[in-house]
Length: 96
Image (cartoon, rainbow, N blue to C red; front, side):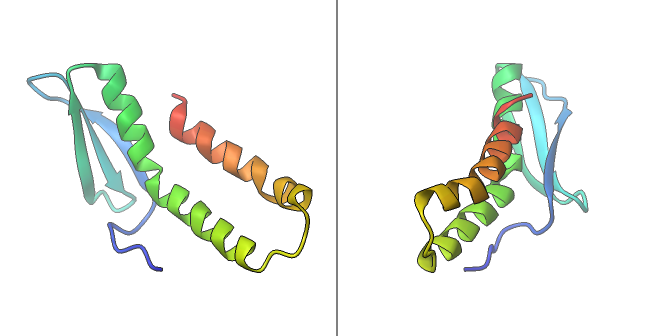
């Protein structure tokens, strides 16, 4: 299944808002994906960060589905092959 949203690698950056903190999520061509606005700057940044990794997380889930549909190895084989990559993606999406 093909992703139908804004194409390209996403990232976020801080911008200004009158009523709280605002972050903009955009793609590599600077096309806006969304604005994230909350009254708490840390919440806004964490939310924007998580959103910015959505395409990579979707790609990882699609990869896992493809592998598991035809996987003939053991759980340990799967774990060795993908856990490091999955953990790195989780870390990128959740840590500042």
